[in-house]
Amino acid sequence: MIPENFPVTQEMVAGPLGDFTTLKDELKKGTIYLADYKILEDVPTIQVNGKQQYIAAPLCLLHQKPTGEVIPLAIQLSQHAGSQSPIFLPTDEEWIWTLAKTWVRNAEFHVHEVIAHLLRGHLMAEIFTVATLRQLPMCHPVYKLLIPHLRYSIHINVLARTFLICQGGTFDRAIAIGRKGLAVLLKKALENLTYTHLCLPDDIEARGVSSLLDYHYRDDGLKIWDAIESFVTGVVELYYQNNLAVQRDYELQAWVCDIFTKGFLARRTSGIPSSIRSVPELIKFLTMIIFTCSAHHAAVNSGQFEMGAFMPNLPASMRKPPPTMKAPVSLEDFLDTIPEMNSTSQVLSVLWVLRNENFDMKPLGEYDEEHFVEEEPKQLVTAFQARLAHISEGIKKRNMSLELPYTYLDPPNIENSTTI
Image: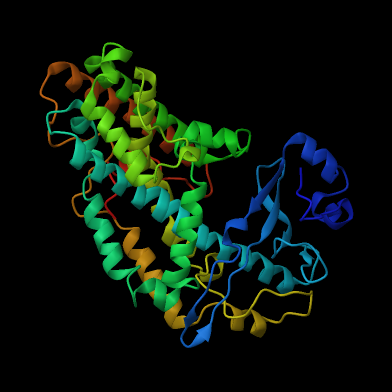
């Protein structure tokens, strides 16, 4: 259902939908989607180049056409419906509609970089790394399993704190919310983060995108998740014969408790376990960690420059407040709203650096350091590598028929850990 604070009507979207269907019919078919950026509401902004910057908390209604193409149907730049919060439509004058879409993309920049990338990528990797180094000895099987997937995570986060999110860093120089807004948004995002968000199969189901056509992140990601889960299952069942063995591993339980209490601040509402009581629970938890540190980060990091190189597709700030009426908009008005050249250059330089591979990049499943010395886990590694190679073959074959290939979750392009 479309929320009450976003009163889109059939009359508004009849044109984009065409003559042979209605909004009600498309809702029943499940082809209508909502991008809701409510989390950005009340996040403070800063001055860039001596000028106040702005963000919005928009709602964007999307429609998937039978061809698979997803198009925006309606945009509201506020969470509060009313005369000061018009609903922008594709039938509006060209620059009015273009400006509304650009505001949505500005919201997406902040949600993507702060929540999907920083919080759910880098900071999750840091939580898992610190707990592993603090609680598990090097001889522990979980340490041996995870340590290749935690490589360089602390290092890259120190660099981020030194150059990007430090006082006077890129966030303060070029991004609308700055460090102050970053802290507010991170706090809100952590309060809303759940175990479901971190487990791809559960997240896909919860977001209602199981039937979305041509959703390559989902399709490739689920194959990677299943491959990791199969590998983890083999390792876990090799060292834990039953649930009691899991429950009695006090080092393992201290590790899980550390993640829950220190990393997730003991929030029961997060759904993050404070202890592990069974073999299946342990398998899911370890799969989530490896997927987060490898495939999730690859998906949200590798395509940043491609998304942002055309700046209006991913603007880091907006220099004028969101429009409160459908007043005429010119090209000059649009250019006066999007970021200035110097701040755009700073953001694009960072995105360009982040899209490059680490100098000693280790693809998913490649373990140069043999932490497992027994024959059985070595065989599991070989089987994992073979399955990833098979997935890669399928992705490459599919990409040959795509106008825009989706390569970010091709296993050779996924790094074992969060390193950049």
